[in-house]
Picture (cartoon, rainbow over the protein chains, first blue to last red):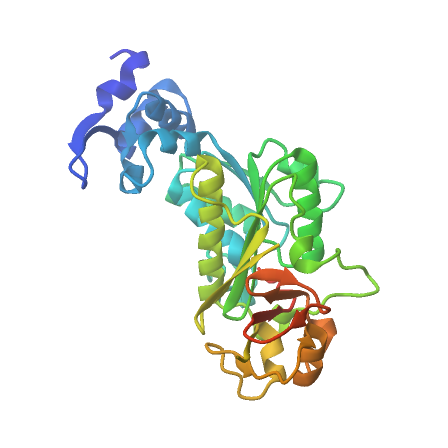
Length: 284
Length: 79
C-alpha cells in the first residue's frame, strides 16, 4: 500500500442521509494512516478533505456544511479567550464543528462554583487549569484538532503574542476591561473578534472587524479605575443555559466569518432574553 | 400611543412587578427625553450603558414622542 494514496485507498463509499454518494474516512482509517505516515490526525483530516474525502466524524455537518467548507474550517485557527462558561461551550462546539486549530487562553483553575455552567468543569477537574482541561476534553471529542494552550494571564504585554497566528478570536472573558484589551489586540493583528457576554437569563453577541468601532458601541469608553462599571452578572449570576445559548451564537458568528456566508452581527448587538423571551437587535 | 419600555438585566428590579415579556407601557402627555423617562421610572442613569429606540442606539437626550420601542441595557459582562 503506497503511503501517498492511503487516504483514497482506505476511504469508503457511502450514501449520506440526504441520499448523496460520497467518500468518507473513518476515525479508525485516519488513525491507521497517522501511525503509518507519522503525520498528526490534524494533517490527515485536512489532506482527506483536500482530496474530497469527508471525514466520517463530520458527516452530519453535511450538507449545511459542504466538504469544501469543512476544508476551510479544518485550515482555520481560532483563538478562544477564556475557557469558562462561554469559552468551554465555545471550544466544545468548535472542536465538534471541525476547526483545525484552537488556541485556548485561560490562566484560572476550575473551582466548585464553575460546576453550574462551565462545560469542562467536572468533579475530577476541580483545581486543574481550565486551559489544560479544555485541551484534554477537546482531544476526547476530536483528536484531529491541533490545540495550543496559554495559561499565562492575558494582559496588554502578551495579548498580541497569544493571538498570533489566529484567523479570528472569540471573546469569552468575564470582565469588560479585559474585553477592551482583547479587542485592542485583535484590531492590532487585523483579525475579527466575536464578542459575547451574559448575565442571568440574558446575553449579547457582536462581531467586530478590525475597522469597526467595536464594543465601545455597547459599553461606551473603556472603564477606568476610578469609575468601575456596574456588574449585573455579579447580581444575577450566570446559569448554564445562557452560557450555552450565547456560546452557540458566538460559534455561529465564527462559522459565518470563516465561511463568508450569512450576515455577521456587525455594527449591531443582538441581545437575547431567553426568559421573556425576546431578542433585541440594536443597530449603531 | 404609549411608549414600550424594555428594561434589561438588573434594571428590572427598579420597577416593581416588571413584566419581562411585555415591558412597560407608558403613555406620554407630552414629549419626554430618555433621561426624563428614566427619572419618571426612578432608574439611575449611571446604571444604563446602552439605550435603544426602535432598534437603533440612542442617547439620554433623545426625545420620545410616543409609540416608540425603547430598550435600556446595563453593561452585561459575564462569561
